[in-house]
Length: 246
Image (cartoon, rainbow, N blue to C red):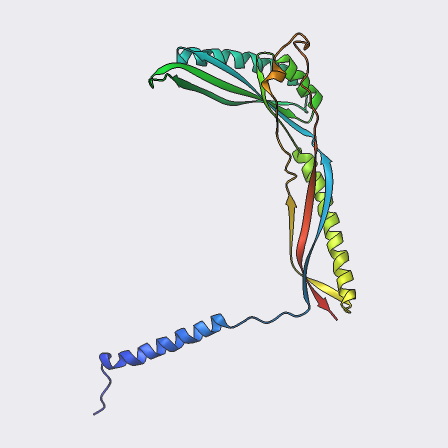
């Protein structure tokens, strides 16, 4: 009579089989991939210095009072009047946009930790590519103060310049690849992995002192804001690898 191994007797055999499968899978995962020969990694970049064409001016109003509702009402009246004037100045002009910023009312505490009053601030933002018109508009909004002036690149100019610089960087990459193949004694090359990236010009904001906005005997009530856009460098880099071919 033939005896079949019990379930208990089969356990070592099953464990040994599982261990063999796991060992083979681990060995396969750790196996090194094929070594690629005649591979060169390098990069090429194209840069251009650009004049900032996008101007952003942040104006603000500040009010104090005994009651929060009074401070909020005063801020709202001031901003409504300024917003209506700014919209009128920007009407029909593609180079100037108007939008509101933050609107906050906070308590002011005494030395004893009690609420002694309230203060609030509200922002109005003028931005666009028409810097002279924006500067004139700032001069007419006499009820507001200038908090900050920033410069940058408009989306249209950035995309246009990035497209041109990308084409130039690719041309330089291919030209250098051809030269490297020749220098190493090869007839040509094939492309491997390639990446294209651009760098932010990093234009800095330019704070404007409140004193510039204060009206004085030497400054007319509607004097435009002094403006002078700066420059920044926009760069596009193509980096990757080529495989030299005999």
